Amino acid sequence: MLASALIGFATSVLLAVIANRRFKELERLPMQWGLSGQVNWTAPRIPALAFIPLLYALLASVLISAAQRDPEKYTLQSVGMVFIVVIAAQILHLWMIDRYRSNRLE
Image (tube, rainbow, N blue to C red; front, side):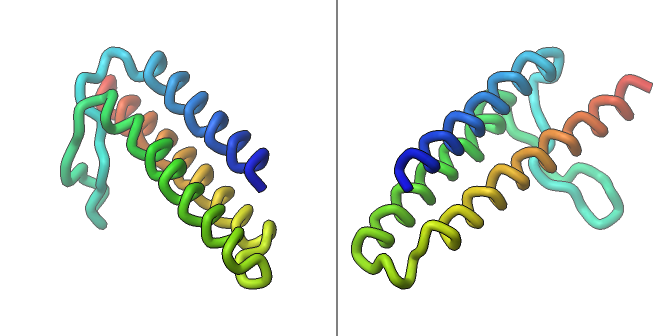
């Protein structure tokens, strides 16, 4: 379980590093959008991109600790699903930032 968590964390960090290069012209990145599609608030680029890898590390440590205490309740499949969802959320966020950037350049 630890190996899969480390691979997931490395993937999350790699996505953030690539995004940092891709969005280097933006000082602030959108963090939340309203139902109308307008950006509600932004954050400085580095903290915005570091948020999900840090969240991933926190969730991984909590879930791995819980799995060691109760392996029947926290199986590799359930913990792995949470990790996949976090990476998917990061990819969605980066895609939305890319759309925001494209719309700004037009």
